[in-house]
Image (cartoon, rainbow, N blue to C red; front, side, top):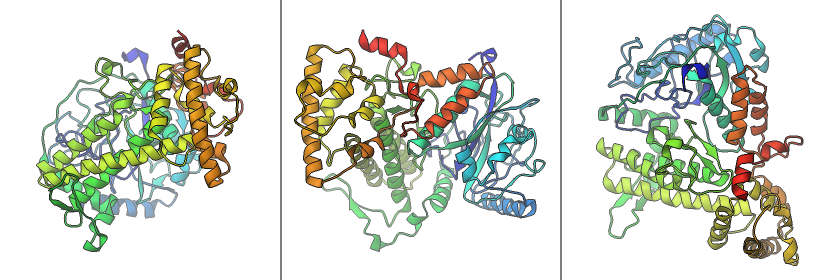
Length: 550
């Protein structure tokens, strides 16, 4: 994006401790887990804090408090813990360079800010931080969160051991390459809204406290390669296990975690004898659960590289993401991926497996796990994904058990007729569970998502609905379950953050009007609610409707 097309933006991210480990890629020296790298301008590459100080000497962590002395004491303790457990960058300059043999760099905000403006904020994130919503109205709030005014001067300090704040897009760091370390308005709004949308959907994600505009222009950087730094892999792995997977270090033989790899004749994998093997399985299963959740709501990440994955199974790095409109398994929101569609919707489960393969390969290269243990982690990923995905799709249809043929036929029908993914599942609960409904009335509740289909396609859909109702009625009769519609609506959102809605908000924001950003934020915080007078936000964009019809 040319500089004249965007405003610089700052994103303050609430990042639960060490949500991102890269995940232990071979270019660890470049992708530090503790610094907001500007390699992807526009708040699309997140780095989370550990249990210590942020990269900025003027920054502290956690909950808001008025008692500065106690907070500073806690901050000092956190800083000592970080320095004691992880190697830091001995330099404090922001000259672009590879930071070798270190896990974080400390830098001060360098963005020149004159009249910062608060674009949007999340009151639910503020609640997590014990931050009074009235603080957002403080005249100096934008300056504090633009990095122009230290927290101490704003009489706000941070005291929690459990969560951290990261100021992102506040200027150059050693990881800025040759850019300015700022973030663009367009992608920052997209990431802020999508992280809150994912949270509203109940999907693990990093979150943002607020967006602050600086009215500065943004430049872009160039591609940059990292180098291997395997020596630090064990240090990072130990730190992450100790603080985020403490149950692993407490495992004993009584936990019965000695398991065989799937193929006959393979060695026994004893997860109680190698914490790194147990950790790789945990990471694999977290990743599988996350991607299954994405598939359930029709979310396509767009750039599912290994450095866009979290070992905690969080959704991070919202770049060219997109929720499905007209259902297309090959859909990708990433225009650069159109020729290959490597990261398309249907490929996400396989890409997740491939990324876990790279994760375990790094652990293997560092001699932390062996080949059998690496293979077992990948096997557990595949099993976990199928278990989670089948459970999600079963609940979306309001069934008692997974019916592969029924769901396969449904998705084929949806792809053929380019049916809206979100609205179809939401309307499905409106079909009365009654096998005596005449054929010519079966599709009436679905008319909004099947407006102009041929007679042949009507017959195909009628056949599917009849089979579906037989399955539903059998389940309801056998279980005497009530509240089918409420149960289905609780897992099938009415609203998702569609790209055209996001773009509309961005267009207004670029003219200085942030009201649509704030309206969308309120919408996506409760995606399963009906929200009267907001129905237009559930509609397909006009161009998608046109393409579906013709």
